[in-house]
Amino acid sequence: MKSLIAMTLLTLSLQSFAASKTYQVTGPVLEMTDSTITVQKGKDKWEIAKDAAVAVTGDLKVGSKVTIEYFMTAKSIEVKAGKKAKK
Image (tube, rainbow, N blue to C red; front, side, top):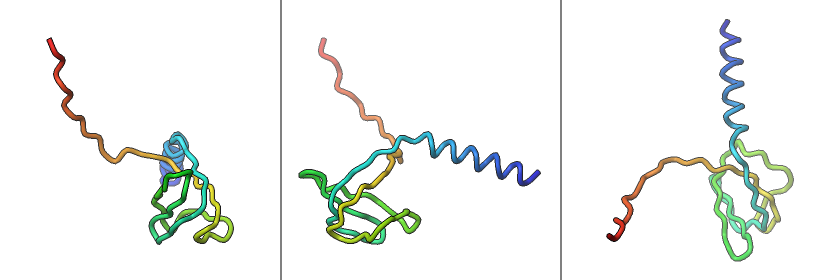
């Protein structure tokens, strides 16, 4: 019974994760820390959070050209009062 519940929870969490839209950014690595990686895309610098669980293939170092796959999730949403319409 416990294994059935565990499998159900795992399936639901995987479906939730798979439903998230993923994005990509490609460019040279400008800077890396234990928790971030910064890449150059055109004239913009993209700083993306990472942790030890991120899968890395190849020799990741500053100057390497990389493609990073990521997804965005809202942490909070604050609704601002709009301007009143003129009469």
